[in-house]
Image 1 (cartoon, rainbow, N blue to C red):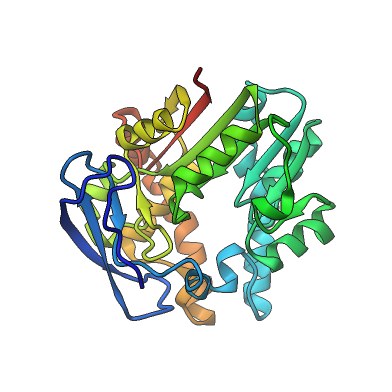
Image 2 (cartoon, one colour):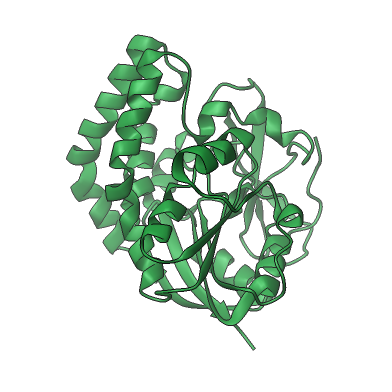
Length: 308
């Protein structure tokens, strides 16, 4: 474990304990403290697993898949639904870049990149999970999949677009990630980032039970204000912010309110949880839309360009 002694955003050293949270996936029974900076309000986990340790807190199912017939059937159902769920993200990107190269950091099994490729974009992916990278190559015919930035060897100003969907909060050093992205992004390139919103209505209501906490895998917890400050610090300008991201806003609502999560259930529990989550998403949709419209959505995304 390591402690964070200086705020990533402002450099200050005075923090307050927001609350402590346990691992919702039951990988460990440890408790993790979420700390809030007194000066800039950035929230982060400290102490936290070191970079060499953090991989042990990610089960293989985190990227999809699972053992057994039922897990396989549930995964097939999810995959069948992927195009409907992810095409809004692809369309967001296409509204800014209709052609060229796109890098998705933390691309998981690669479905977003597959749909980008279908629309004429040239896809590249960075993903730490070897199983997810293998799936992308073998099942989705995505050849340019890399474990990290170093193995990818992108040249300066070579990419038209970079996306991070629910990924930036996982990094130990998100500032360094943004510095690398700025270096490989073309001057007219676009960056899209989506993260959980620690200032959301759900976060306020459910506290350490909120699905967006996901300790210790989510190391940083951003609000629109703190993410914007970090982006500006690293040379980006936010040109659009939106709380209408129902792919995760609905899931977080269900997981938080009803403690339904098929990841840590038995076979019967997996089926009931999966079916229950889909039904509750429909029932809770109006409430989630109200959260979105009042700019208190459980997650939000920003579209950015380089600032000169």
